[in-house]
Image (cartoon, rainbow, N blue to C red; front, side, top):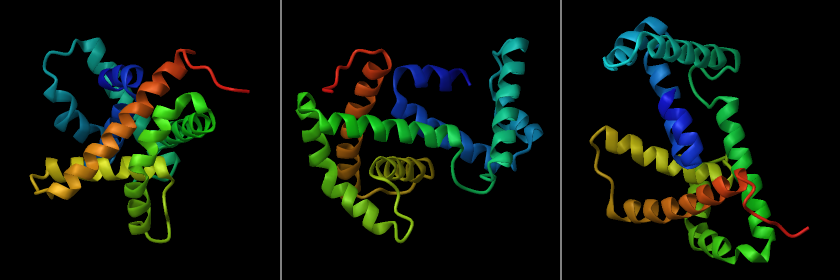
Length: 183
């Protein structure tokens, strides 16, 4: 909760990956607040009673949303889908404005990887931005499991990360009304 709000302000890409991880942690604990309390919240021994209560309420609200939105066993919460939609909208505006040629160059450098990722997705192809996040999240999970990641995959991840970092930085500027677009 504290980490999520901090990440959302600082780096929307890190925030989204973090929230996808939280969704998976909630699923791993069977959407059970008692297990989440025991396996996650209790690990924060330095929390004040007020912060502990806020954290429990945050997890409970996420559990409730996951149940109501039908993503208890897979998929993503609408609030996380909205982040992808916002990033895709910003991407489209950036691509349409010649003042953001550096962003366009970063995108085109990443495009062959995006095409490959989407081709591997089968029938339910994600959008380009989501495909990038899926790749980074998958690599993050492999690393957390202690599995080997090939040099080629790490190289691709570095390019995707660089691209998403550029998009995230521009998102922050846009959120602060620091970007101008052609009409």
